Image 1 (tube, one colour):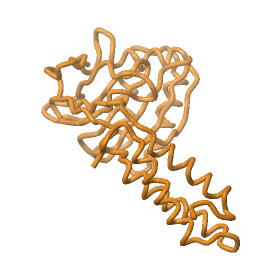
Image 2: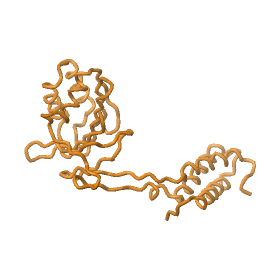
Image 3: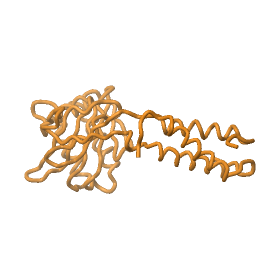
Image 4: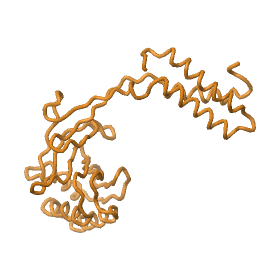
Length: 237
């Protein structure tokens, strides 16, 4: 029988299975900056990508950058030291921000958040909204400086008439950038959902093994996954 004394656990497993197996039809795009091939998602924290570009120093492509409303995502294509990276950004800010203390705080925060320098592949995220400049390194927040002048100045580093690099608006047909569409239905498959259900059941069983038959619970998870798979409006292999 599928439902025995541990009904509440089975129901919980069923709920999780249904969430994992919920039919997904949303398609996302990965847009590559054409000169470096660096990929960027078409959305970041709900904001749409509105431009991509590359910062160069002579023949060296230092980093690729993408703009999402008031946020800039940098991905390093060349390894440099923390001091050199921060000084380059500070130099660009000096003519755009009158708040010298905020610039100094920004420099210290960035250097402190890059103890190992800025190796190739590092992600730097700068949020300029809300009258402050937020900094993140590899998806980890490292600090925030409250200063409208600093936030506005950093926004101008990549958007004003003297921007350090040109940001091109990615075209819908991909002519200005390389676009790869990803269908989430092909990633979150019903079969994988059934496996997740079994694993969840096993984990719950380990926590409650004094009261629950683990083997039975795992089998129940598989069965629940199978039942939901048969009801889905699309077939996924």
